[in-house]
Length: 396
Ligand SMILES: Cc1ncc(COP(=O)(O)O)c(C=O)c1O
Image (tube, rainbow, N blue to C red; front, side, top):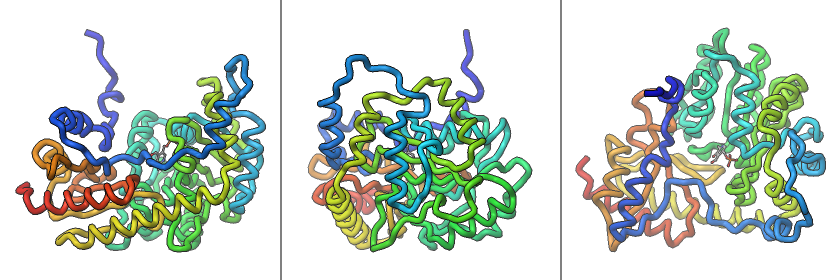
């Protein structure tokens, strides 16, 4: 019998997708499942992007350049300039989603057994990309009581070893919704420079910041040119998750040269999706204004309704479209499964993402769930109502 690899066996299951069979079974029983578990926005993709794919004049769907088309990268550089991020086309590699940017980044800076420090809870797939690369995630706990702010720099210092290659942050955070301040970024900049390691920032939710706060990119931080690597994506920005286009951005020439070799191995990013992504850069500001207003409305409603439930503690998201809720339960994996198997109100139930999968430290997040507010307000309100009743009935 041929055997799969140890690495394959240790690949983590997605905490978001592992409950899917239970949701499917609930649907087969005629239950309407309200999905609070995934980050697939229901927002319409900008018309300019859809039109560009409809009206293309390609006769052969060729490979594009390994690093992505020159035109697209040049326009991307202009997009970044609007955010006071000064890069040029050669500092950008277009990738198949932010996911591939993460895997190229980790591949380019680590060897087997190296370490990356990540504040937890974090986007669960960081575990998967690290495992695939033979890299150990070294978690550093950020707390719901501090709204998931940056842990103290002394705590980071304690974790840095000869094997540490990078600190990885997600800003704004999935699953926390936390938005790092320029002061926090400056502290991280100082520590990565001191130890000559990289600072990777996953900034795929850059546009989604609320309460008049603006995003501060690590690429805006002076003196961080050699250390900073940004992971980016069109998936959430333009509600184009299925396009599979992202990029990695860095002023570090050696890093880009190395990452391009990984990119060459997969030949090129998708051609049609680059056409759509290039056109998406023409999306009018009014689109973002409306989307932001919608998310703020949803967030406010979600927080307001969750706060009414006894025993629930919530982080207050300042960006992205997720929040972590701490529930009066002991095992959110069991609770999430129970919601799908055994609970419904008027033929409806909710699906949440158990938060333990967003932590690397054993035992953390077991009483927490991640809620994505990617549904319109009416469904969100019903979903929180169901959660409230479910918590009353649940016996653990
Ligand atoms: C924080 C974060 N980074 C990266 C990704 C990957 O996105 P994609 O590969 O669709 O660009 C996601 C997707 O949900 C995400 O939430």
